[in-house]
Image 1 (cartoon, rainbow, N blue to C red):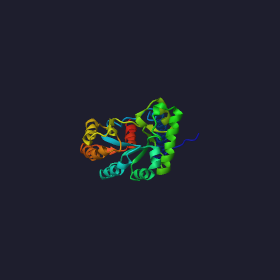
Image 2: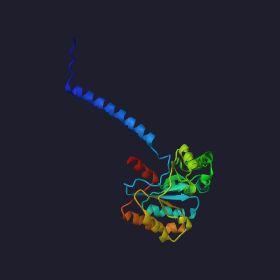
Image 3: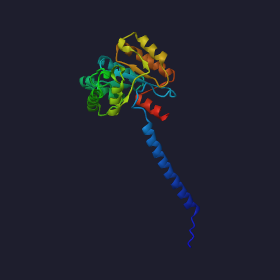
Image 4: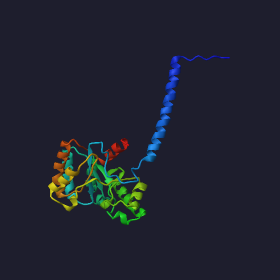
Length: 242
């Protein structure tokens, strides 16, 4: 009968290898389980984590191109990166401006192609609109968007299913400036500053009063200690806290 003797160092090495293998297997199982459990693409997102003192400014773009250069200047001076949801049809008309938004480091999301009422479309109709917008945005920016802000905020089942099948997160908002009605600038800033909260997604459009209100909003939010981030950053922090 043979008797084998193993040094303490060899035993320790073997134990560490065994533990490492177990850890990798456990991590792989947890990772796959977490991916299966992610609800992000099945339901619309209204806000980020309530435990993070951060806010995302979003801009839906299908008109208002005359105000965008000034809006970009204000964001740059404030050191803020926003998320612009751009309509494909609009991007075709203003490819240089669309590319400029992207080159300045802002996040580009999809606002669909033709700005229809999504709830009036079938799943296939919504898919066609989303994918057509994607083709345009990819051609202009070189990047595929992963976020979709449905026109009019409509998010019926056909909209959500189409976005999910196309691989998008459906993004809505928790603070609405209602700036498309073009109220006085102080009304816009008050709507934001009175309703703002941790993880807020703020909806804006390129309008004259929004341009006047934006510097006030940025300055006050920063003075309150909020970090101004993109929607993707909000989502990353939201998922990391689950």
